[in-house]
Image (cartoon, rainbow, N blue to C red; front, side):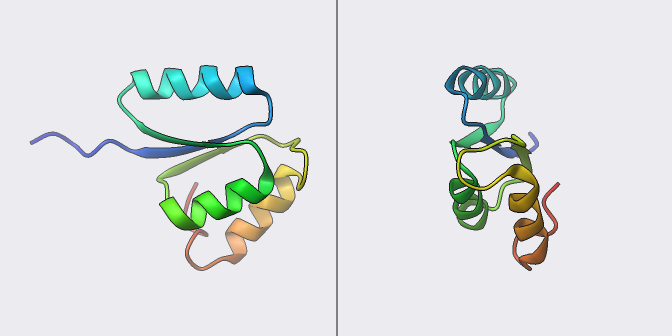
Length: 81
């Protein structure tokens, strides 16, 4: 029986970094969701409930530390590393 592929949410406002990271992870067999802002990170984390979030610290709207604080305060997303 094969293990279920992990879903990883990748958030970065640099399109090159976002593309490269997503491609590497996808080639590794993971399901990938991507976003380019803190607001997208919060919305996608709530919607997709990923197994892992890779979050840039510097984003155009909400910095990554504040996004992390909001994720950890949300009962639905606080368990996501």
